[in-house]
Length: 358
Image (cartoon, rainbow, N blue to C red):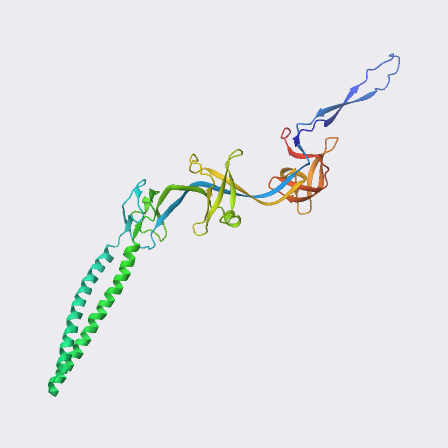
């Protein structure tokens, strides 16, 4: 319990000159000095606190924010391509799978179309060449003279070589088209969820965005939860844990951890009882109890001082002098410190100097 020192006095001295007495004949009596003691109340100099019994608790505080959990940041997975098309505006409603932006891949789309034409031509030539080979091989099964047979065999060999050229060209075009199609598909940005477009990065239009640069966000407010991105949340919270989320000294919510997303770097907690009046971006704190000591002698942490060699407090003597007093402590809690020895119950120590004197 914090209180002011009520009986301390600051001593001040002054001298009073004794009144001379006696006759004036030939000599004078010595002055008689009398000491008068005056005191000054110094109770306002310091805030004092008593060593009292209580529970020492060591806690870890984790911050969280009430927000939508269904949201995504959209970015291209390729680079060195100019961003030329954004098909939506901030605030637009989109559906999952909707095309929202596109890079400039006109050159690849033209090459793909040209390759498609070459593939179609090669397929036709391959078909015709195979028919020609079948025809020649049919002739070779008949009765032919040696010279004629040699001529037919040469034509079969020539046709097979040409067939290889057509097939290789077709395979090369198909391989290129697979590569082109992959790049073209990656040049398109689709909404992954139903929601509202937010935070379009218009400065990227006309530039070649780096791989992974966020172009826009899609937000779905249908499902909101408390979300923590504190590193401590990943250490102390697990799926299924029950937590208390303090909004203020009077208001709190009970919630359950439903997801620990290490990739998205967030821990999600659903309210046990939904509160539809709860506003977005409401901040809360979760206090995780790490250690405690119940019904022990305590002081506020502010009153306890520590060096490499010792732990101590300041006390005031009866004469108003501040003195250092060494103590032994136990658990150092978030707000209180366990006092093991060096102080008696309800003994007063200095909490802080009030600043009355400078």
